Image (cartoon, rainbow, N blue to C red; front, side):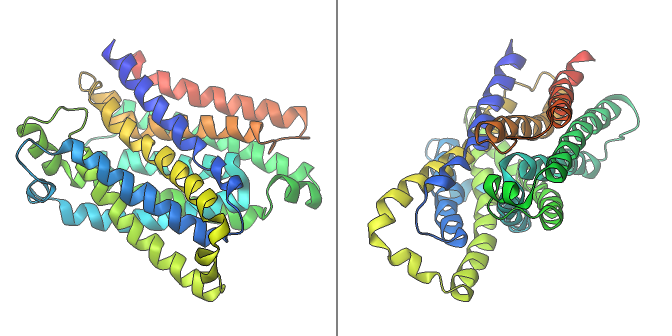
Amino acid sequence: MDILIGLLIIAIGSFCQSSSYVPINKVKEWSWESFWLVQGVFAWLVFPFLGSLLGVPAGGSLFDLWGAGGAGMSIFYGILWGIGGLTFGLSMRYLGVALGQSIALGTCAGFGTLFPAIFAGTNLFEGNGLILLLGVCITLAGIAVIGYAGGLRAQNMSEEEKRAAVKDFALTKGLLVALLAGVMSACFALGLDAGTPIKEAALAGGVDGLYAGLPVIFLVTLGGFLTNAAYCLQQNVANKSVGDYAKGKVWGNNLVFCALAGVLWYMQFFGLEMGKSFLTGSPVLLAFSWCILMALNVTFSNVWGIILKEWKGVSTKTITVLVCGLVILIFSLVFPNLF
C-alpha cells in the first residue's frame, strides 16, 4: 500500500510539472527571456524556500542543516543543472511541449538514475543494479519511440503547419538543445544525492521523512537560478527586452501566470521527495524513483501535446507509434515491481 501511495504522490507532482508550460501561452507582451526569469524566481527561489522551511527541525534553522555537509556540492550541481533547465525551456520553444519534453526528459531519466548509482559503487550488471539498468533501458526505449513519432510528424507537416503547432519549430536545433538539456538536467539528481547529509540531519532532528529532503531541493534550485538569471539578463540586454519589466499594464496578468508556472514546476520535486518516503521498503523502486518521475513527465507532457493540438493532422501511423511509445513508458513504471 505504501508503494502505491508513493507512486501516486510522484504522479501528481509529475502531472503538475507537465502542466507548468501551459501558462506560457497566457503571458502577454513579454519576450521568452523575461518570462523565463520571472517564473524562475517563483519556481527556483520562492516556492523551494517555502518548502524547505518544512524540513527544519524544531528550534533549528536552515543554516544549521546546511552545515551538516554537502551544501556546496548541491549548489554546484544546481548550477550545472541550471544549464539543463535553461536549454530545457528552449527545447519547448523549438520542438513543442510533447516532443521537447520527451527527448530532454528521456535523456535526463537515464543519466539522472544511473549516475548516482554508479557513483555509489553499484554494480549495474547483477542483482538490483541490473534491474535498475534494465528499467532505465525500457524507459529510454519508450522515449526513443516517442521521438521517432515526433520525427514522423515533422516529415508529414508543411512549414506552415509546423509554425502553427509550434511557433519557432526547428527540428535539428531542437533535438540538439533537448539532448544537452537532458544530460545537464541529470545533475539535479546528483545535487540531491550530494545533499544526503543534510537530509539525514533533518531526520535526526525529528523532521518527518515526507519533508526531510526539501532543504536540499532549495540548494539545487538556487544554483540553477543563478545560471538562468545570468543568461536571461544577458538576453534582455542583447535583445533590448529590458523594457518588458516596465510594461505595467501586463504585470498583473503575467505575474499570476509566472507564479502559476513556478508552483506547478516545483511540485514535481516536492512530490518526488514526499513519494520517496513511502518507497523505502523497496530499494530498487527508491533508486528508480527519478526515472519514474521523468517517465511520467514524458507521458503527461504528450497528453498536453495532444490537448494543445501539437499532433493535429498527423498520420495514423504517427499516432500509432506515439501510443506504442507511451505504452512502453507505462510498462517501465511497472517493471521494477515484477522482481
